[in-house]
Length: 255
Image (cartoon, rainbow, N blue to C red; front, top):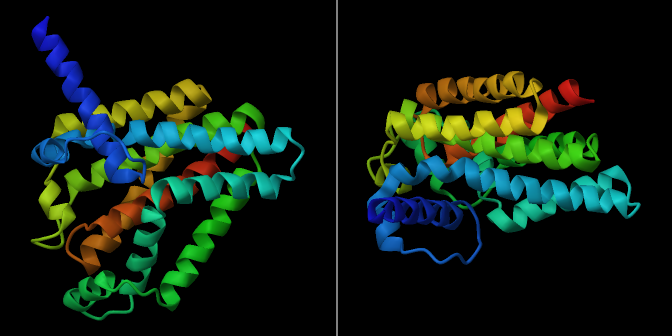
């Protein structure tokens, strides 16, 4: 009984740690304990994505129910996600795009550390926001709630997969410090993502899951070729691209 309670306590702490890392919410987390868990707690990333994605969908659905046009409903969902996450994934996408202006791995890694945003970053971020906005705007009612919950979970499980499949591009930094998740951690995260897709979108969720995880491949290839591994910005880019692919797939499959 004591072992069961301890295990549940550990799992609960992993979820809080994932919320602390992926959102701006002031959650009660023991940072020393979270640091010792490292990548072992990454299984909870899709749990965070499911909850905040579902909440964003609920906000969009409520806006539509109140009579607001689809564009404003989608904007409300995106605004919620930007505030709740601090725009960390969007920031990663912009940094990764900017680093493509470098000619060597060292230059690209240095560019990614620069807090300023360049032309490539502005273009990539603008396209991504427009794609997500138009995608969410095509969904309404319970469909947008379920879709954003499923896509939110699966797109964050993609981050765990890349953490496992790639080595850190830097020897120092958050990615290197967190470490590499085990195969079991990836399996749990992927299972949560798969179940979320199937439960919320039916049998179409199988296709949705495959397409979202497939979105990791181009990011994996580009990051390995240009950086030699992953960084937090690479993981953020993967999440954004996977979310866009997931929204596009949801529209085709469910509407």
